[in-house]
Length: 342
Ligand code: A3P
Image 1 (cartoon, protein in one colour):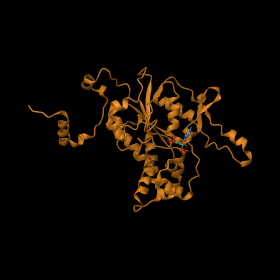
Image 2 (cartoon, protein in one colour):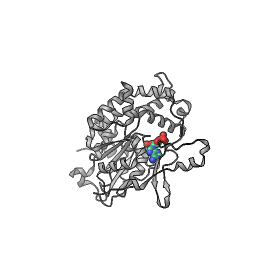
Image 3 (cartoon, rainbow, N blue to C red):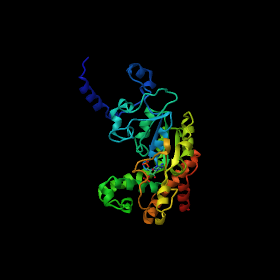
Image 4 (cartoon, rainbow, N blue to C red):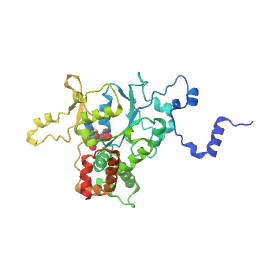
């Protein structure tokens, strides 16, 4: 019997089976044959029980902050490149393997009651993430947050500008969303990244191919912003986490009012839509999200609003059908958008 050295053998193998170059990781402990050869030093417990999948700019960081306040909920350690997000299932990090992934998570002190999770807001619209996640963590619960896709697109564009994305600085929001097929490639690329995550129904349907509906929670981002304590009660119930954590006591509204009291002559009014909820610390101090969240920018211009309302019309109709099928209530922005259709 003749064989080749390992590297050459691998090369030969992938020549014969090229489609197997793209791995699909499974939990090594789910199969006895794998468990038997799995190192004794290793554990399969450092895997998330739930994923916050995004999309970006819907309040995912706020949800993340609220979740880690819970005594039984633990997130991954930060990544040097993508900060609090691991971004494992969506891109090439996946090829680094499950040891690389598990190293981000703490070893739970109690596997039953501790809830590990990660939030990577790009999972939502990723083609690969649902299949890959279902293969490694099939029992994981999936949480997504939805806001009006037009507002999401606008917030995302503003986010790119503040990160000095050259195309976002060069082109107006209207130019980005309305660019035609002959527009410069940098503009078209930005447009895709801006608009595609807002095709909510298509993305959720893809997750539902791999995860049963009872494992999916859809949060209304508007409600998360206005009434996080109620949303967090719902999240706790959905996860089945204990003890019950009292978010009404632990969260407080950012006191923008102080500023308004100081500058009444400037006619600044407290806008409850913009006041964010923050963690209440001891001695009355608060911990809010950094400057990058809740940025101040001018409201969307009416032409862009009208363009996007029409652009997302069919997607929103599909979303309403999907939510109906799942027996979920329609968020208020969706009701408003559907009224425009009639
Ligand atoms: P803006 O910065 O456009 O206002 P993400 O964390 O998914 O990127 O979402 C950022 C958005 O979360 C912010 O968008 C903001 O509107 C929203 N948000 C919701 N609750 C918040 C909170 N408690 N603190 C800060 N931002 C919050």
